[in-house]
Amino acid sequence: MVGVDTADGSPGAHGDGWACYWRDPDRPLEAMRAHFFDHVYHPHSHDAYSFGLTEAGAQRFSCRGGAHVSGAGMVMAFNPDDPHDGRAAADVGYQYRIVHIGPDVVREVLTDVAGGRAAMPLFREPALSDPELSGTLLRLHTALLGDADPLVRDERLTAAVTAMVARGTARPPRARVPGRDGPARVAARRARALLEEAYAQKVTAEALAAAAGCSRFALYRAFRAEYGMSPADWQRLVRLRRARGLLAAGLPAADAAAAVGFTDQSHFHRWFVRCFGVTPGLYQRAGRS
Image (cartoon, rainbow, N blue to C red; front, side):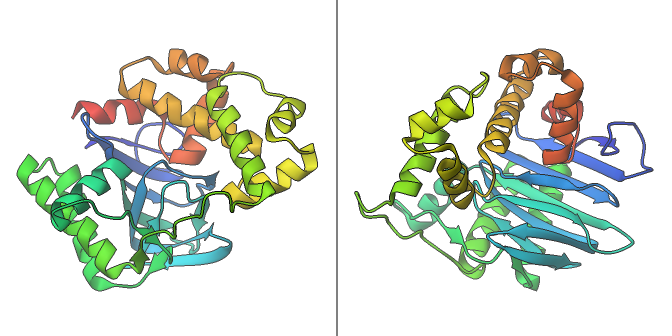
């Protein structure tokens, strides 16, 4: 575990609370513990499965078209690319733990458990009340942030993933029949492909609509329906995700910001905190534990 910072990047534990972060330097596995009062998460998503445990207070968030509240003892389950936000739902704020587990790690665990290829899970309910899941996640999180032996971490990772799949109302996503996707979904995916390819560049609405093969308004509506955010928000999120990789590789924050298309480092810093809850510096130092 590395660092105890406030959400605004100042040291100590005051104002908007504190956050601690841990990151596995060898695989997509991360963990955070935080206590926030006024911090508001901007709508964002992760390229990982994210499992949270609210320890105290309560937080409210929007996800999958609905409003949800996670109180003390409840579990949150986000699929990769699930757009969501978050803020305190009580005067005491909320204290929570969360682990981000890359799809490749989840696949490896499930394949090992099944003794062969396993279907990837899809979590239907983003807020769950299940004491067994809460305990399993707490044990995993404690091992990750507590510098436990690798064997203990791996055993608790397997236990947490299998418990979430077995008890977290999960099932494999329905396969889409080739050629059955509607024009709106096709347009949204074309636009996403362009944004992911040209994430560091300035992309105009006209260029994006041309790539998608529809009007700007139709694309905006289709993109929000498919990904839960505007094309501009998605491009910023892709930039932030790429920056995380550069920070993990040791690139200074200013260089990482410039490399992914942020011309203003303070702007990069502000959005990193708004989407991930920690500063770029704390995130980078987390991999050195």
